[in-house]
Image (cartoon, rainbow, N blue to C red; front, side, top):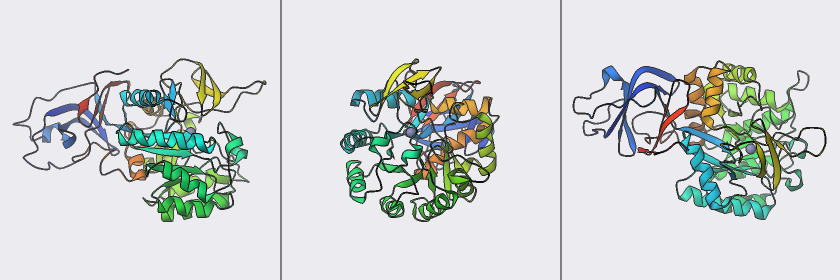
Amino acid sequence: VSEFRSTRDVPDLVLRGRVVTSGTLLGDGIVAISGQRIVWVGRADDAPRASWPAAQTVGSTLLPGLIDIHCHGGAGGTFSDGSGTESRAAAHHHLAHGTTGLVASLVTADESAMITALSASADLVDDGVIIGIHLEGPFLSPARCGAQDPAHMRQPDPLMLDRLLDAGRGYVVSMTYAGELAGAGKMVERLTASGVVPSLGHTDATFASASSSLSAAAASAPTGRASVTHLFNGMRPFHHRDPGPGAASLRAARRGEAVVELVADGAHLADATVATVLELVGPPSVALVTDAMAAAGRPDGRYRLGGRTVDVVGAVARLTSAGEQPGALAGGTSRLIDIVRRCVQLAGVDLADAVEAASSTPARLLGVDRDRGMLAAGRRADVLAVDDDLVPVAVWKDGVLLDQIA
Ligand SMILES: [Zn+2]
């Protein structure tokens, strides 16, 4: 899997178990860590361990720390309207369940609220709590608003975009946009010039419009790929006579021009849909995401999301509805390992494929794959140990064991 880098790299922690990384599975593997870095990964039989400390077995399977590129919050708080304490608690909750690379998603709101949330989230990046910021709007289609507030949606506005990116201090890594809006093309250019991955979503685009927007975005995107925000959710639905953005996204993903996010929690997508997409485009083009809101790790009840109220019933979050119609889905309540588990246990996805879509694929999309998203020599020692049911047992971040799974 990876080479022994140097005989001087004597590890201070040696973990042994089933090892899953980069789409492969080692039945009996070793992950050796020195300080904050992984120094060796491979089959236990091949490990040069004469002078190494004794290997520890923790849980049954070692996974790379997971990377969630679409997450609004957890543990009662959101990044859009939580205090600093609440935002840190949200990030810690996901970390304690194995998400060592978290991107904070900010919902569409009025500009001053978004700027406040951007500034607060940038502080979290400075402190190493999260790895970046995702803007979900405000240049979205009111026709496909989902839980995003249509009252605050705007036509693309370059000056407003500059103000938002400035407030993010260079830490905005992706932005959801509706490709059919007037001026969307110029906005994509501005985003990619700033190193931001454009993510098509909350869109009512036709197939042709979505296709050309994704192609243009991929051509200039920092890592050569556009993103698609929660494929099939918040977009004109796939129809065989009106294939829309869903078909355009699948085709771009199959060509390696886009990575499609899937909220594979059983509420946003049927398990068979998840399995179908993974089989059609492959795990290198799929990013599993939680889209988690405040109720992740909390019981059913009433929560806030960017100034709107959300009722969580049976772990499914919907906008509070006064009428008989249920409100729109308003984010998820899972942690990323829960999504991986569901993919494996209910959608029948290979464990190595599900883990790839929750670690190395999102890392590659954001251009941080030399540092994160894989159990391989040279990467950060971000490791998640799980049991046979894929329940987290221990998490290491930068080689440091989190003392408690909360
Ligand atoms: Zn979202």
